Amino acid sequence: MSRPIKTAIASYGMSGQVFHGPSLKVNSGFDVVQILERSKTLSKGLFPEVEIVQTYNKIIENPEVELVIVNTPDALHYEMAKQAIEAGKNLVVEKPLAQKSSEAEELVNLANKKGVVFTVYQNRRWDGDFRTVQKIMEEAKFGRLIEFESHFDRYRTYIAPNTWKEEGDEYSGVLYNLGSHMVDQAYVLFGMPKAVTAHLRIVRKVGVVSDYYDIRLEYDGFAALLKCSYLVKDAGPRYTIHGEYGTFYKSGIDPQEEMLKAGHLPNEEDWGTEPIEDWGTLFYEEDGEDLEELVETFPGDYTLFYDNVYNAIRSGAELEVKPEQAVDVLKILEACLQSDKERRTVIF
Image (tube, rainbow, N blue to C red):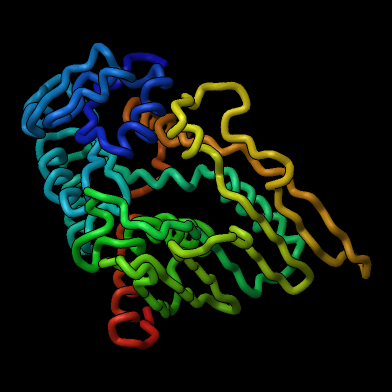
């Protein structure tokens, strides 16, 4: 790669330590020059030469910084992204882009006016299981799609202390957290739905924000079901896809997050590969014969996101995650809130 992109990370919490930091560390196209840490110096472990700053303005006012990573709590995304765009910085914002689609649309318009590269960190488009599902959908050996079902379940009976994700208003909780990923995946596969029905709940006795959702997205001739609960002791299939002539099941979950949490870097050999016991199985009928096929999982690779960001900034390549798509995802999430609140199906 040619000249590295001078980059600043606006937070070094979980997402900075686990997702953004490692991907930037192993990519020679980026040079991390500033990280915002108000009271700690955790980033020195991965970036010993970086300048740690205590205020966001130090990043915004630094003429050397070309790219800003806004990975702060969701409620701060809009204002911090707006500051960066107005300063002429290229920008990556953690999902969700903002809390409201109207705020997100404003940011998209401002970025277009300023001529900056602006994208959203939807890293789970590069999960191995989702990349495999995309391949299965393209091949369509199961015939006409009847129903698509996706789960992102966890088992957490406790409330994690000192985390904004476990407290706050309707924009906190699991819908805007994991739901941002699952809705984005459905959007990538199928586009905007024709109707949305959603049920949100608090299933943990000590919970204060939603930790369960059941979302039904209606399309022409089929439905996409997206489900999440924090009280699933023994998870079932991650993906279940039913077609006219067959069914695909995929269990397990992409291993990258756990590998990153354990301190591995995403340039290691066999990165993102799954053991054979987690591969999916496709059952289908062909020429009157019942067939069963073990489907190898594509390796997941979050570093591909930043490869695309580099090429977009340096070469004008098309963004994989367009901010306009993030606006659409927020509109679907808002429809989920409305559907649950009004106990009805929301028609687009």
